[in-house]
Image 1 (spheres, rainbow, N blue to C red):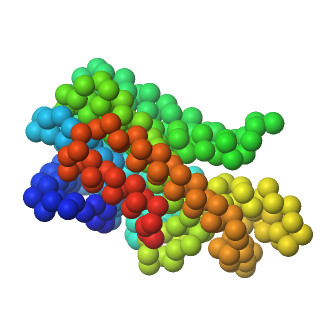
Image 2 (tube, helix red, strand yellow):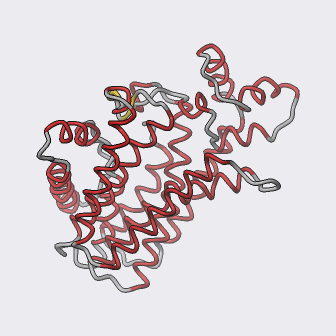
Length: 328
């Protein structure tokens, strides 16, 4: 598991680390099936690692209430299982061959196994969720609706006359921000926080979620496989829009013509893909995308201002810096 947080208070850091270890243990248990092959496929991405960003947000949000509430760890498991399920499905849609430094499930087995494994994880998340009460079930259903809507909107593209950049940001809010917002909401709500704190941490989650995805798309362009655990330029290869690409498409300078043409379609040809990736890495639109990610992170930081000055708040502020400076 990638370490994504540090706290200035070593006691608090040890506390959150121990809670994350409980989440990890519960994740392994929740992906166990009586049928060994299902256990193998379901645990494939769990054991591959990951940042556990969403469970971490559940745990940190719970610090503003009663972090010992028995519903907190199950909620952290629910959001991570939901996230993992979407990764299995995303890799099928993107025809990805790597995930978290390991062979993707669809490449190791096949698309059918990957899709059904994702469905299995959704089912397990739902079983755990049922024990958290009807409000949690409703919130998860609304979140899942937003996840699916965001994916559909990305697939279909902007409507006639719709600004492509605004459309893209709305996709990120729904496809990525929604589940991270729910992570903050679950942590605060299930630990007994008052409604104002719940709303603040929900809003923070959506904002940091958009920043996280904007930064992730930049990493997809700039990183090498050894850093990110994924093959660079996956979105570019599949013709999936990113903010840097959309900004480049709006710049009709003659010297931009080759990149604009390449960005207008998927790039399965390795030579064309390599050219487009290099052009995008040196294009000014990449820095503009970085600035937009920083803007969302700054908004998330400001959202936290009304919260009490506790170690969890300090850690959330540090996460705002982490999401826009990471390289993998």
